[in-house]
Amino acid sequence: MQRAVALLALICVRQLTGTEEVLTLDHAISLALQANRLILSSGLEVKKFDEQLAATRTRRLPVINWYALGSQRLTDVNFHFDQGVFGIFPGIGPIPGKNTTIRTPLKPAALLLGRIDQPLSQQYGIGLGLHQQALGRDSAREQERAQRQSVVNSVKRAYYEILQTQSALESVEKSIELYKELDRLTEQYVDQQVALKSDSLEVKMRLAQAEYNVLALRNPLATQKEHLNSLLGRDIQVEFRVAPAEEARWTDTDLAAARRLALEQRPEIRQARLKVEQAEYDRRSKKAEYIPNLSLSFNYISPVNFGSLIPSNIAMAGLLLDWEPFDWGRKKHELAQKTYLVQQAQLRLRETQDQIAIEVNSKYRKLQETRQLLVIAHLGQETAREKLRVVKNRFSQQASLLKDVLQVQTSLADADNQYQQALLNFWSAKADYEQALGEDQ
Figure 1 (tube, rainbow, N blue to C red):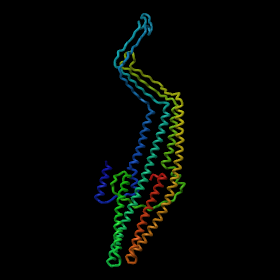
Figure 2 (tube, helix red, strand yellow):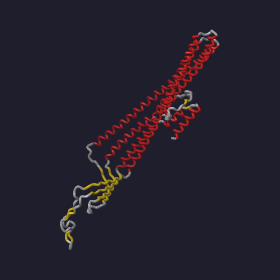
Figure 3 (cartoon, rainbow, N blue to C red):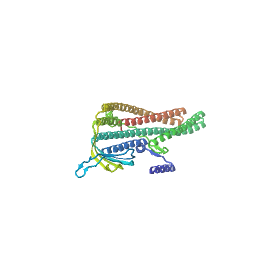
Figure 4 (spheres, rainbow, N blue to C red):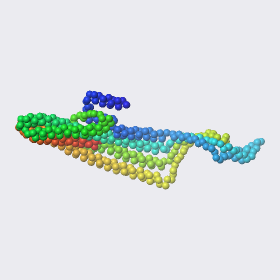
């Protein structure tokens, strides 16, 4: 509730002041790690395992069961005693003195039973189950970590896409300023009869086209911002601007060292190793079923309304053994199945290691390519800017034609677009490479 109120207040302040939030990449990543719904859902999966572990630990403790049966007897409960069954005593004679039958009436009765069992031999199997569930929790944590890395990568890509569109929009807005200046100069030259009317109309046409390009860029920019807001787990209508991109930088690293680092910290590798351990504990748990179940047992029985001859309280304590000596090979085949599962988990681990090594190699090479293309695009952009500066000065001194200015301006627009695309490709490739290494941010 407090968060919603703070967000509403922030939106109102920005609407009143007319300013937009300047969102840095680090701040965007921080917001996503705190509020992204996929990350929060993965965190809940870990908590589910915590609760499952707590529930399994209770199986080490005594099991207490109470039963109550209320019923109407349908048959008589009769007790027959033969003459002298309890003995013959001098001066008294036989007890009872004759054959005697004691009858109980057919009326409602109840049977109360209580039982307390403390597992003994089962503690070993319970311990194996706890270890297996703990490994499942660790696997869920690695899955949460993988989800965090995936979200961070998505945030980076969405951020760079906005940055590219925003930069393209700024470039088009600058070209509008240039076309407006050319329009002013061209009209002046037309009035002086040193330029044709068609030249003025061509400049106006290009100015109108640039103004349309501004509108065409703002629509996808709005959609991109909504997508990023959704990744950050906040209202999609929050207005913001992204901070200018940092200078592209990357230090060459040893590819073999990068592969080793990825094999150490990639969540997929850790999950595959945990799956091997889980399969092994599962096999050991199945093997533990050969051990008979031995418990310390206390039992209490209380018949109600069964007649005075039946004791009203019966208590017993002792050892309870539950053992299935003959299972016709069932446990043997189930154990063999668990052994095959262990082998499958080991094979998947080796396959995952190979796939991650291939992925790191591929992302590393892609990053090298995009870095070199960025250098080329930057040089092309600087060249086009210098050419435009020269031809614009010559045009203002009537030393060059308008078509030369327009041609160079088109070349600069192309160079700007190529540079922005190369920059986006570089940062996206760098984000993919960092994710391939298993880095959290």
